[in-house]
Image (tube, rainbow, N blue to C red; front, side, top):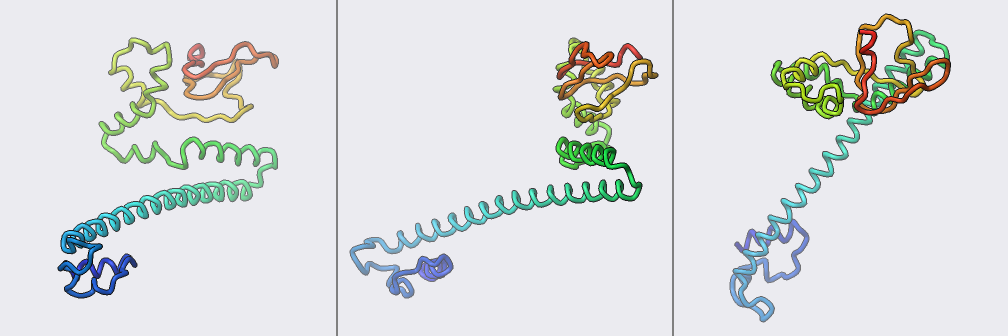
Length: 212
C-alpha cells in the first residue's frame, strides 16, 4: 500500500511529504493524518479513478477532433475531384460554378457518405430497415400514403432514389415525357407557368404523378 501510494503520488505529481516514501505512512506519525493506512487506501482509489476519468475525457476529445478531421478530409477530397473534373472537361465558368455549388450543397446534406453504396453491401433485411428509418419521416408526412399497410411502405422505400436540386434548378418542364414521381423531403418547389408562380410545394407534398 505504501509503495503503491508513493508511486501514484509521483506519477500524478502530488507527492509532498517525504515521510510518505517510507513505512511511516502506515502508522500514526502526525496529528494531520490520524489513520494513515485508511487515508492512503482512499487516496490510491482517488488516483486510479481520476486517471481513468482523464483517460476517458482525453479519448472523447480525440474522437471529436478526429471525426472533424476526417469530415474535412472527405470534403477536400470531394471538392478536389470536382475541380479536376471541371478543369479536365473545360466547362464554361457559369456551368462550372453550378457544378461546384451542387457538389458543395450535396456534401452538406450527406457529409460525403454514400448511403446507397454502403447499404448495398448489407443483407436485404438490413437494407430494408435502413431505408425505412431514413425515409420514415418523409413517407409519413405524405398525405397520399396515410393509412397504407407496412408492406406497401417496404416496397416503396426500396425503390426511392435521392434527388437534390439547388435554388433555381428546373426539375422538369411542361410537355416532357415523365417517368418518375417526386416526393418533397425538404425544401420548397415552385410550379411556374410563363414566369408566374402557380403554387408552392412544401415538405410532404408530391408532384409528377400526373405524367405517370
